[in-house]
Image 1 (cartoon, rainbow, N blue to C red):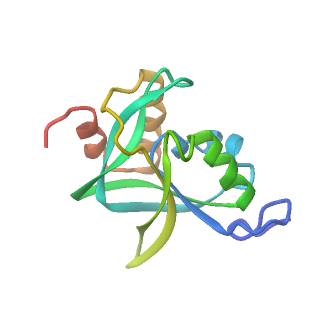
Image 2 (cartoon, helix red, strand yellow):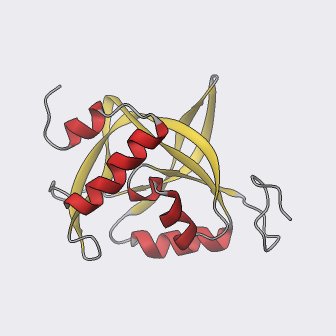
Length: 159
């Protein structure tokens, strides 16, 4: 048995908080990548906006990133993961080459901010994602009740 927020089934402490804003919003994908992952809850990354950049061989198109924007807000999910699973995420996300892992503050509601790991694709050329990749994100936005305006903007919509 385990405490869903503090211990993995293996007994390893879930000492790392990770903020997902792209395809890792999908719970099934997170469980495949990080067996210890436990959902902490929704959060907002202030001072950034969602973007799409680079090219993923596995998805066949651009992938999500966050871009500094003083007025931006990116919704996402905070996951608690073990150190071993954080290393797995590093490999999945291509850290430190495709993405860099940064420590940023997110707002988890009720005036609470948490320092979390966030993967950022710096200096990648803006591009469009595939329909399959985008579909994963749209479904998650709808499932969790996230404001879809930022996602529309990232796809070239108007402010």
